[in-house]
Image (cartoon, rainbow, N blue to C red; front, side):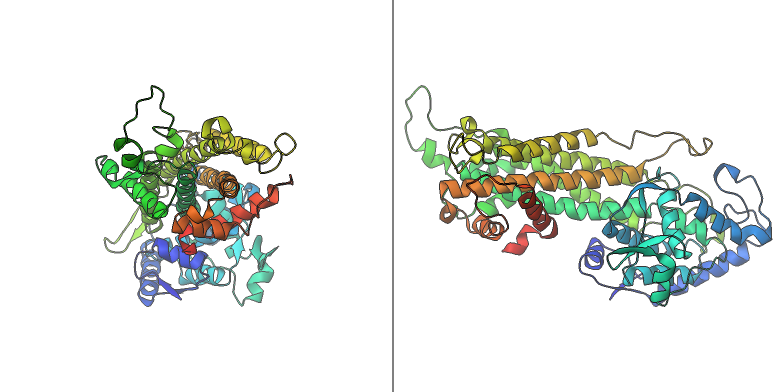
Amino acid sequence: MISIGNRNITIDDFYRILFGEKNISISPESIIRVNKSFDFLREFSQDKVIYGINTGFGPMAQYRIDNGDQKQLQFNLIRSHASGCGDPISPTYIKSALIVLISNLLKGYSGVHINVIELIKGFINNNIIPYVPEHGGVGASGDLVQLAHIALNLIGEGEVFYQGKRSEVSEVIKKNNLKPLQIYIREGLALMNGTSVMTGISIVNVVHARRMLGWLLVSSALINEIVQSFDDHFSEELNRVKLHYGQQIIAEHMRDLTRGSKMIKDRENGFYLKKIDENKIRKRVQEYYSVRCTPQILGPVYDAIENAEKLFINEANSVQDNPVIDMESNNVFHGGNFHGDYVSYESDKLKIGVSKLTMVAERQINFLMNNKLNKILPPFVNLGKLGFNLGMQGVQFTATSTTAENQTLSFPMYVHSIPNNNDNQDIVSMGTNSALMTKRVIDNAFQVVSIELLSLLQAVDYLECEKKLATKTRKIYQALRPIVPKFIDDAPKYKDVQNLKSFIKEKCFRDLF
């Protein structure tokens, strides 16, 4: 059990709930806080005009709602906005959104009844995942459309994913001894305001982006070994004079991964201790940038992932509602904490960084494919008969195509606001779109890195250099090779790439040591 509500939720909490299958419990102090907030709002709202309780929504806030219609108003809001289209968002990302949502409500600034908390907890712990379409949210009042689909499930309507199937939520709720949500004051609006979906997606994105960066580090270490590069470009001495934390961390990882390699060369022995008189030096003095500049290129992306994690976790621990029910000041504040700009902007930055990683992987693949560049491998790392067999030639097209898609997807959503909602929402964040596009870019990056890893495995076999690899890169080679065995004859590669992609997406490379 992971207790939430008594402290800020962490990235480790998300990881253990989403991937470690841990259940949640609600801290007693947060239950007290939620109950006090509800009682305060019930009393405070009796003779006042408060948005979304006794008024309409958005540009129709000028219309007063009669007391007898106020509960039905909340149902109308949920049902009218459950209007998303497109493919459903993957269950892991929506479960993450539920964690953000319950964390937000437990802050005690929404005035909801405790039954909302208990029901969301029941969904999380029983792995009942709302059916939420990708398209619909503009990220201004938060994820209105996507959150409406979640709220629709909570009132016992719509569909969910449960035990691997898409089912009617009414049946699943009954099977798990849960009861549909009752409306007391403003539960519908509280569930739909906020950035829970874009934030939940973004937190999973950070986990995957960090993992993908790790595997590109592995690829970069292996390609340095295969081409027998010099070690000074990731040396401590060179990288410490560039005052960026990410670069220094990447260089440190490169040194760690290649430690003990019999293939990495020492520049002093290669050039400084020998007199070289020829006009055209036979040895390559420096590697191509995609091989040599790994710390300088991957470093900024490392920093971007670190910053993104901090920001998304801050958002997950923030109050995203409107209005904000503040018991301490005995007041209700109307504003725009539901606006998704922080998440949208940071998602765009993360998306750009991951696209750059994809470009690095694609250039390293090209270096491996082109024998005129690497001068040590056959064309397309072909272990068969040149001309008759084709090796990795076909797979390179996929890497190039996918990289091109990532470059196009890197256009920022943050600056692509379109006014809507009768111009009430005259500037919006498009945060959910940005988070979903970042998800696609990361998934594409895993695909390209998988193709590079497959190429590297073939290269190691061609050079017969497994025993010369560093301890850690050799262990990685030994772990990956059974997934995609060495091939000489041509055969379809799509299953091999998919199997490799599934493995590296689910496992951190450090787990292999």
